[in-house]
Image 1 (cartoon, rainbow, N blue to C red):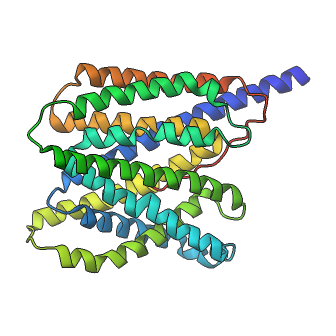
Image 2 (cartoon, one colour):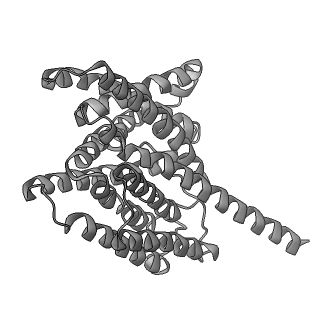
Image 3 (spheres, rainbow, N blue to C red):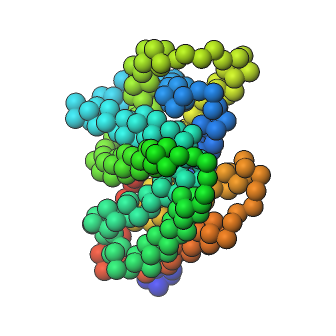
Length: 332
């Protein structure tokens, strides 16, 4: 009986891992669309794109929370509200302003390269948590990930182009700023989700959406002051479509999939799942630019997939500590 129970538990664990990985793939596919948004609506500045996207995200989140607003917010302390403000800033508002600048200056590939370091930063931090897989067991995965990022970096940055070096440096700085911003969010949000038993990960995500929408409202006067170009009705239609589409697909649906995955997988494996965002973003970039991947880009794809598979292998055999899944949550 004990053996049968152990086998059933093992099967259930394998199914949870598979479901978690599939949710991670889905989230990555939807989040990869975020990198296309600044290109699709290039007539608008990164600040305007941020306001458009997060006003939609905030409005949708508020509508979904409205029937339960009092019961949910009753569980939030002053400290939790302060956390929502800085998490919304780090994971949404500031992150997307920096990312949109990086995409419009340096291109989708370059931006996705730098953000591709997220699995490394999140996994290294996650390795310090109780019950996490050790860095020694994650070393092969991290090395493969680093090699993949180097390949893409060499392709995107070392290739000759017409863009001045100073401009490329600015775009690169924005991309690294986005990396730091979202890494801070990922770590902080993980800690808060483990503390809030009375608030679900989905509702927490919606609360972050409401706060992000309010932050976007505060940015409207700045955007109006900076606006100096007349846009056609077609450009405004594209802007509204992109803003609404990214809000629904990435911020609502993608985040829901990510939060579901975060309940099923440990934080160290969650960090590796961010690779799928990079993979899909690069795939979308190739389709957008109507070309096939280069040798370096192909090598990067193979190395990143190998990194995820090796990380999965590291989690098949539990470490000596208890590997309780840690929730990271999402706001993207």
